[in-house]
Structures are given as structure tokens and as C-alpha cells.
Image 1: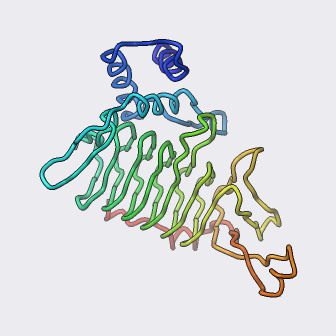
Image 2 (image 1 turned 30 degrees about the vertical axis):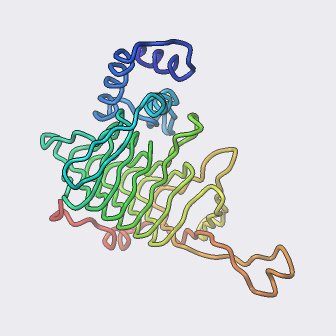
Length: 277
């Protein structure tokens, strides 16, 4: 693993030159490890998360050396870098990939028990934990880290973060419920057991007001936006008072509100139906 990492970093920084065959062998090993979950773009570490920048570098090397290839079969037209075909998912992995237009790119990990409903998209570098549901029209962006038993409801968008390579990707921890048509971007981290209400947008620039603890949460240069474990978050708005113009038109800007922390009633309302799995 150490040798692989050193070679990836050297290729990324253009400190070494390898033959095309050796580069393909290197990328093949790298992508196999990503597909198996043995390496990740980010991983839990001492109660926090650490970014594995070298993994992101490897993904970027794959894009750099890739050549456009025709992967079409019949009337299904498909053109992409030859280094990133669709993931070769096998039934032995115990993943339900339901037909109807979903795509899972190679270099992503799907744990046993994952369900992907059509149409959905899982991009390279993503990690999807055991028992998670990726519902229709959901996106798991590049390098996004999704925990176990998460429900990504229909239309939810989990943004990707490839560059800068040291930036934290979007992280959704275990047992999170993400409602329909949510957008979670810019390295936001959602703590375990949280509930993100339908239509909520979470980014580094949109403040989150914790009405329970009387705190304001933001992302920025000091770190990503972090939603506390078991928080229940809904969309909100706040008045814009930066000018007479905004005040005269009673303009409001988007925000998000933590209205409570998860309790037994919330657990019952967000319970996933085991029969679907």
C-alpha cells in the first residue's frame, strides 16, 4: 500500500514517468482497492475524520491519463474516459442495483445491503455504507462518504469534492435520514442519527441556527459546516437587513434551522421499512 501511495503521488506531481502499461496496472490496482472499500478518500480517525489526499490524487491521475472511449452497447450510448468505466458490480456483493437507468462508476464502494433505486448516480471515490438506500434521482458525488443505514431520499444531492485534494468531502454519518430534494455540499458533515428535512440546503455559506442550543453553525476557512448528531434540520429563512432596498421589499435569505434533537417520536417517523431490504 505504501508503494502504491508513493507512486500515485509521484505521478500526480509528475516526478516520475512510467510506460502506459505500468500506469494502467497501477490505476487498476488503485481502483480495485477503492471498489473494495480498502482505501477511502476520507475515513474516521480518533473520533474525527481525516482526508486521504493521496486517494484524491490517484483519482485525478486517472482523469489525466484517460482517453475518451466508446463504451456503447446497442442503443445505449456511453462515452467516457477509458480509465473510468461503469463499476463491475457482482451479485456476490449483496447489492441491489435496481434496473431503470442508474449508474455506478468504478472506483466507488457499495457495501453489502446497499439498495440503489433508479435513476441514481454514484460517482468515483464515493463510499456507501452497509444497508444504505440511495433512492431515485439521488446523487452521491465524487468522494462523498455515506455511512451505514442512511436513507438518501428521492432527489437528494450529495455534492462531490475532488479539489483541492486536501479538502474534506461531504460526509454523512451512520443512521442519517436525508429528506427528498435536499442538497448537501461543500464538505458539510452530517452527524450520526441526524434528520435533514425535505428541501433543506446545507453548504459552507448558509448559516444553520440551532434553536435548541441557541448557537449559529457555519462552515468556512476554519472547517466545514458540521451538523450535530441526532439534530433535526428543516429549511428556514432570515430577513436581509443590509440595505434600505432589502428592508423595503422585506427580502429574506435562505438558512436552515435545528428545531429539535431526535427522540422516540422522530425515530418512529423516520424508521426504514425492513421489508424493502
